[in-house]
Length: 319
Image 1 (tube, rainbow, N blue to C red):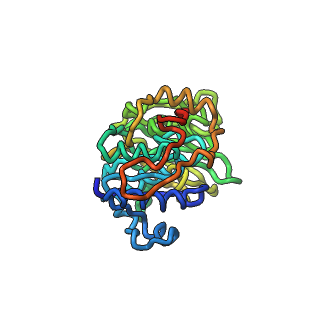
Image 2: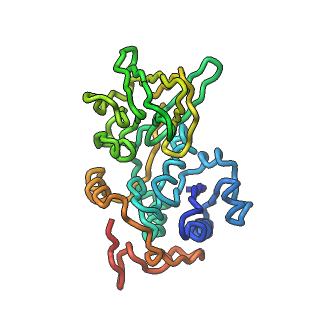
Image 3: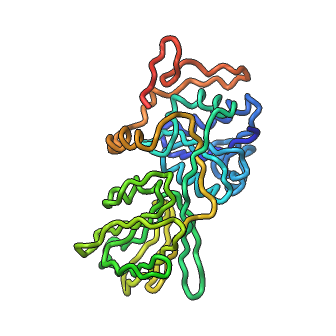
């Protein structure tokens, strides 16, 4: 690899320090490290900055933060098939591959080509109005929901050309298999293996006795007509981007043409992650005592022993 992009959540503890150490480490091994122009300015290294959209041209991205940082990275490179390695400095870290303590051995494996790619389906969403169209892509979900003080919505849903139903509800979650472990799960949706190419419709607080989550083939188009006269309605993408919707807006969601690729270095399965991480309910906290020491010199040795690496005097960190 010749160029690695870094997407970092600088609001999390130690991420600023780790990002700077990481750039020195990579460049000491002949790999160019780049960040977005705004993050480069915040880190005090403007010479490493590129326009955010140009990060998609890197050989891969490192997402430093948590699952939210990885979701943002996936949208930055949407359509480019740039692989992403998630480094967890957050709480649950369901999508991220490694903990901070494993960072430098993981980088050595990455640079040696000792990894595999896991394909994750993306969603393509469009809001259509008579005078405009708004487009978005999501790794987790596209959500239609009412405002804080709004009345219940009426959401008229079609699967392809077929009318499904009109949901009286607080909202509707349309998720990918990746998003099935996120908001959809909290709203009563099913867990879906990321190997499947499907979309999941999960109503939010439906005012009926029969409305249940529905799984539909990925090649279908989901179309939602919003009926919300006088109500505040929002559309959110991966819980990070949002637009106000208007009465009569039509939202379409399909499988995106290009998936996201996650870099995998371990032998964890989706099922082991469900067992080990979801059982903890997001109560894991980043522990600064587990952070590795770094040596940004040009030697090829790992920067010291630390939890998560095998070796004398170290303990194997729990996955």
